[in-house]
Image 1 (tube, helix red, strand yellow):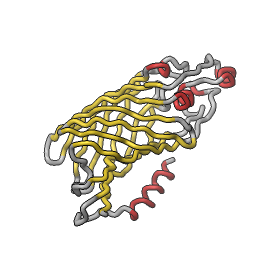
Image 2: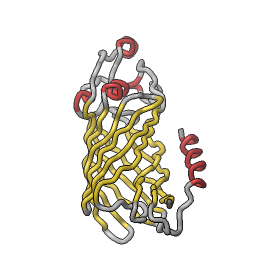
Image 3: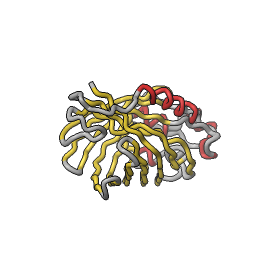
Image 4: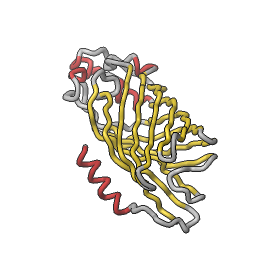
Length: 248
């Protein structure tokens, strides 16, 4: 997985050289980078592991030419997700459960910003490991601690439709026989609530350090899944991002 992500970034980087001058009226801007995430081994695990953090943020079409920061009002941008594979070697609690391949998610994000407050809604379709619909809805508040340091605090709800939730929280009859877990079917709905604190420290006009602390809790029907060993799902992430802007 690390090799896949690294290769993708190496291919994308020369295609997305930063634009030094913004003579054009419109700019598409995005922050992309890579970091390290320490998070549960799988959704519902009571163990954590370190893994790559693929950063793809602040993708905006901005008519004002201000890179990386959408203005007040309504905006639409693409939304992407990458979910690592899950297999029984990852955790003893997964013994007897089917392997889930790596999943790629593609969709959109709508947001509304008013001053320091931003509300957002994201929806994505899965390919590969799952073929369901997933997304998030949340609100966050921005505080500029200095010229270089910005902080965001917020709350977020995670959603999955029936196919998504069944993939990651369900137990089929065959899996029940192999694992000893009771068979479990569930439908769509909210599967996680999270409180987040994000920090961004600008190293230059185009490069920044990004950190995130998250306390998540699995809720709803997902929380009652027999494979959920711990409903509390904390995570810590640290990475570096670079802004790429395309004028047109």
